[in-house]
Length: 493
Image (cartoon, rainbow, N blue to C red; front, side, top):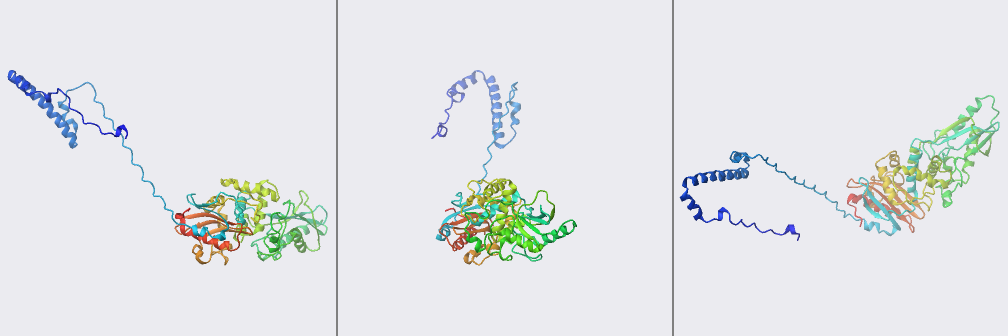
């Protein structure tokens, strides 16, 4: 026990005081000097009475000045007593949240394969659940979220890709210059292709014919030159499986093509060709009529004869996210690389994407972007990056609300409204999960925002990787519904 906490002994009365003197001394003095003694005793009584009055006044709250007249005047000022401030009581600690809602059974489903996940409270940033959240792994089409965020920063929501036609170097020639718009359509104006609101070749051809015919000095139009030099390098990412071309999910990436190079311009999923530039050239030549076609580049400073523009980036992002369109994602990634100064090939996508993400203030360590669509196994994103980015998306910071508005909604829209998503018990979360789906042969993913049952906004990312099949989607949906049900009481155990 510290010394200050030990009991202290009661004080002993001072020895030799008047209170302990024998009575014989006092009576003897009284007998010898009775008059003086009485005067002295009276004075003593007055002093004692005044002291008692002061004590009584203090005890009952009466002013202490009642006895001042009895005190002997003094030239020394009475010191003012100092008051020691009492410490303010500490604020009561906030009640801690008891988190006992477990998803352990759902997370142990073997259909999830090599499992990673993270969940955050989107309002506070607190990590509620984590399984390998800082490990960067392939995220499949969830990569499109990063591509979209980079495009909003580098290009801006209002950017439009422009396809132009300029006068050629040779008499009677024009050059069709691709501006990276893979949505440009060969369907008749008034028809909606797979890309609603896309520009049409027939409109562009009408502009060119009108401008050409307006100059009487022009010779007959006989040659069309195709310029796709805005994008460079390989047209097919080496890590992509070529079956994606035949299955109808990905075209070669060129700055000049029509309808995402689909065989069927009206269908989201349709086989693609191995020569998108050639297909676009043939379609435009048909619109112009009676011209030959060759490849080349536009002469510097050539007169513009016509131009059409894509939908704005804000619309393109929503089109790529809602049905997970690969071609638009690659278009955006390549334009980001070009506009950021990183380059115009697949090899420039990493630098371009990271440049576009830098402004969001989230650590990009571990991110690998070899494409914009997520089709490659070589891409890598930590789930923790996604949960932080989706916090900003949910808060609609800057232009990121564009991404939220393009996300599929469980049971209601896009790739989360298909018959194999959020069925059975998982339907409890219908309308409350806003997320991007991902699927490649070696993994299934889902990441986005959950408006939980208790009102808590959550951000989450789930990866089911390696030895997985289509049933992983059911397991992912069940786990997501578990997060929805638990909300802010979600246990990390």
